[in-house]
Image (cartoon, rainbow, N blue to C red; front, side, top):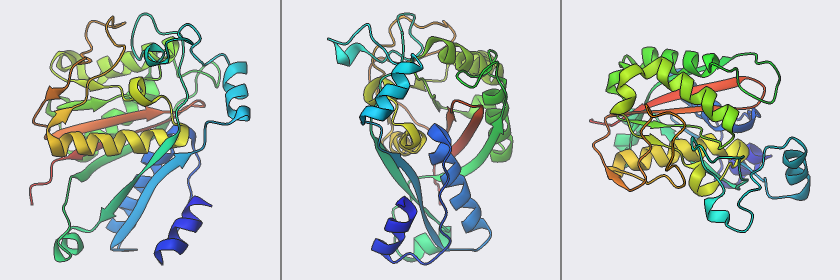
Length: 273
């Protein structure tokens, strides 16, 4: 219904599709929109994702699966601790984000403020020992990131910002940390990581679209927002700034995954005209 209502309200008459794939939905939707532009199906496409997570049934499901943080119930600001040794689970947020995708000349003709360009995307699906956790070595995430970098024709050392999924679930964060090491090697020491869920929690299907939009804004403003509760990282090779960081971001990568093995990664680059 999201795509239906948005298209009716704004009289959007191009292709209309809904992708339902958990936290990865936003990146998959944006990638579908990019392909629509490339194949001349539309000059402008509205893409993104959202989900209503703050309801009793959603909470019950997460409680039964033992995914939620419980050690900071009286200190909610400290609850979500991505990649931190003190993490004990995720917190639930609610929200979404929309990206306007546009063919370059169409955007220039209408005087649009172009914030960034999508330069590479890839997805993968990798089976784990169960559907609740990623594979231990993060192979599916690593594969998606490697393919996205290759399709963007950039090297791992060209990435100035990595926006990680960073759930705050210990097993998941360890798998993602391993994937990051696999892809970026020693460059991890020079590459800031943004774990946005430390601030807003896991917004479900809206998560990766929010991550992408925030990454675009960080690139446009030249400021990487500080991570919260990431003071004692599970991996010394990862750099998670705990204060706002001024940075010139030429290329950034957004990584995401969902329970069941679906992963996706997108490289965005600064628009230079």
